[in-house]
Length: 85
Length: 505
Image 1 (cartoon, helix red, strand yellow):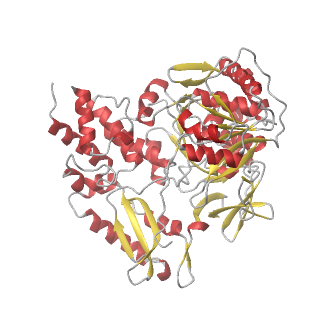
Image 2 (cartoon, one colour):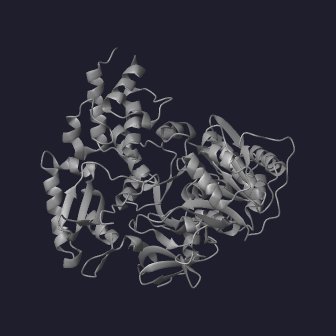
Image 3 (cartoon, helix red, strand yellow):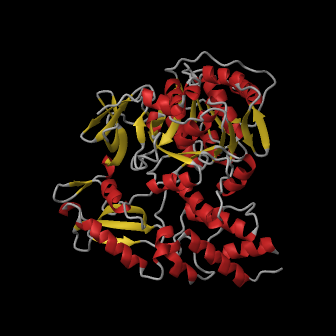
């Protein structure tokens, strides 16, 4: 079953919200161009949370990639898309 | 009031565990005895391989040969530039049991910083690995007398451990505190071993446990309370090479005890709630939590999962542990009782320490400000309750001196605001407006699990209103003038501590 890029983005937003419920409004409106650090203000623990939760939700592994390899939400979506294909 | 804590810790530790706590003269002696005692037990699990104490002892003895054949001798400093790995454990034990002082360089340091550390600590050898070889290159090039070794090297012959005294140097740990420039804290064999002894106090099941290592071994909490406590107690330690795999590793390894900073413990709790299961698995019974303020609610949340979370307090300069809380459910806001052999006193609210766990001073740094009359000045403002439980109320270096001359401890104010369940973390700092007027400001990070219960209301407005009520109860000079409700976490150090604002410097 293929998952569209938009569906991945929506699930990723849910994960980001669950890590930071206070940012629900801001995170729900997030686009792929949003920078994880400067726009979303994610710290190292939030990034760790996002990766672990994403692995659980999508059933994938973030192998051979470091947290610093992701700059934007779109980078993460692309990585997930690549792992699912 | 000083409380004799030996009997209290003895009671909480339990006679069976307490009787196994031994005092050794040196790391060499401790390692030789414990390796023999636990020879057939698993010591380390790393990168898919399992090593018994016997296997590790052989590899350590062989690496002593590598060091000795390169010209390293007793009394030298040996710099280790290695990520968390079996090679780290092997090289560290080889160095200290050869009578050397292991200078531990964080594996994330760049080449210039590694060179700087080598200039500061003057090691005779630098041990790196394939993962860190590039960072060692500058030091290798600029310091021709420096022996550069690879942790993967080995030798056929085994070299026996050296005769080492308790007062001999054992470990140098890089520390900067929150404000100072980086320097090395020199810990003797006696100090490091006291850290091992203290790690068993107040923990009923301290021996033959299963530890999952998620903290950097370049940090005193990871090195002493995690790795060395594990080896001292005949436990198995699985090295989590990437923290994103910590729950996958936990599912496989089934740890019984973990040493965590609060931010990681809190993240694991949030994930456990999201996915409806204890992410660390049901084997986990104990979490030792420290290196930053432990939110009291975490103690209760983990208790619901059947996990005892023990807050503690320690410093790099004190070989980690100074106090531990054997009664976290009763006093979750306390970092516990002072360990029995810790000498201490409070001077103008600041905790001063002496004792055999204390460092022998900073290397290549001015020590005059750190000590007074032989006491190490921690910089931490503390109080004890009637039963001798310790509470950290602030940091002297973080004390804000207001234009009025009044001193304000941000930590004390933050503790007041943190009593609000809606708050996860807060920071009080001195800010300055356009006219140059200095004022106190507060920023808070809301606690998502609590704000979610509020429903569709203006969360920021609700929190601000509640904070203003607390603010109104404070002495006028200590009231904050500006409240900001953040939508993201504070910036944090690699040890997960909040990077404090310095807006007025």
